Image (cartoon, rainbow, N blue to C red; front, side):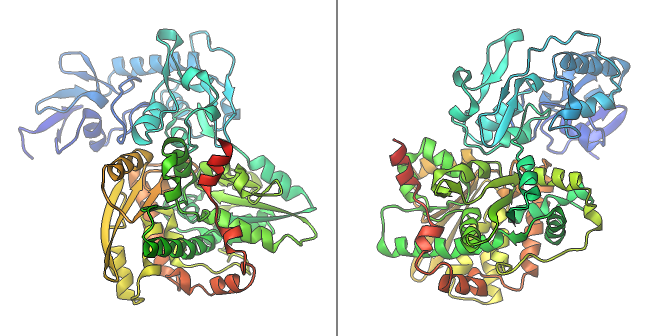
Length: 567
């Protein structure tokens, strides 16, 4: 150890090795210092003051905003600090809704956890909170200002990572709140439904819109035939809360659980992703060969990205692929298959994404006023339903999805991680179908959790330039570079950093755990017998049967046209 490069923490020397603040150093030392407002990917705010430490002169410093300096001596656990933290918790609870048992965040609330950790047995101060102000206007999230502790996590997420700016601090002092502009309902704001604010919120002031009771009602209806599709990213995120490790592929157990809950037919959205690969690659080739001005081609799988484009860059909508998302493509096929059923067809989608709820409600995806996807539930909601049903998930034997749409490829599975759509399309376009080619594509810069990735590949005698972005701020920055003259042929955009594995409908976890989810999807791809979408035998059957003469009707959409109609 370099004796000139360490900090004494609770009497123990801890080496400084690139840590940006004392909090990182303290956690490296194995000490779990409480925080509300600290997220490593967000800017330092230092509002909650829970991470205060005592320095050698008796002063208090916020560990999250204090850089470590050689020779510093700090204490993290003194009687003074414990009293200080308990006082902060009491003051927060004094103005906080205490209906914990009926809160959507019950059991996942950081305020609740810390109240237990610090043994808060009572609150000495009167509850001065106003009556709950619920904003239920969005299809994607629900806001309850009475549960807000003003940590600012949602504001920084919305502004710094997503560059949406739907919410911000309003007013000052004791009247400070987090609000939309002019206190409008969130649905009237620039919100795109990505839900990352809900993922960052530690207390349940912003939560995912809960639609599970509507699904239960459908399952209890004897006159309804209830089908369900499961998105690729769900399988690697659900297990941690149900007795499995994070990143483990639990698709077989999810199918078994859904079957016991009463779903009539269960499918994998990866099949819909295979349709998307075929349609999107065909569209790309047509544009490339025609030398259209509407290049680059932007992917259209992510509804929050489509919303972001509509609200901020409507001039780029002609560049957005006309392909429906895998969820909507597959829903069209399933609804068409079941339209002659003697029972009322009800289709449910289990998604990692909150914006999928808004996508399902769009008029473009309704037939005679009836949505192709009746209900979207997130991974979090499915976990709740499994627990409510009494099914012991860890004890289930894996089961297969149903026919006739039970065949999918590894290319469809990797749609759930950033770069997956691009890799699947490149597999389709490549003339070399060998296993070596698969590995070459994987190592051409399309994989990894970076927010911006660029790669170049040869297609015939033409060099294709490809960009892959996740996080809407990164998308906005890339668009500005394109406007300034930067050339790309194909751009994949995912609103959530890291792709669907980090969707706001997933159980919230650390960056390291999200990476495990991505690895889980690539492992599932390796175990798949079919790696390319065009080799899925179901595709030929669909194109020669149900889709014959109706490909554009059932698999495509024109967002630019819908915006013109609204205007």
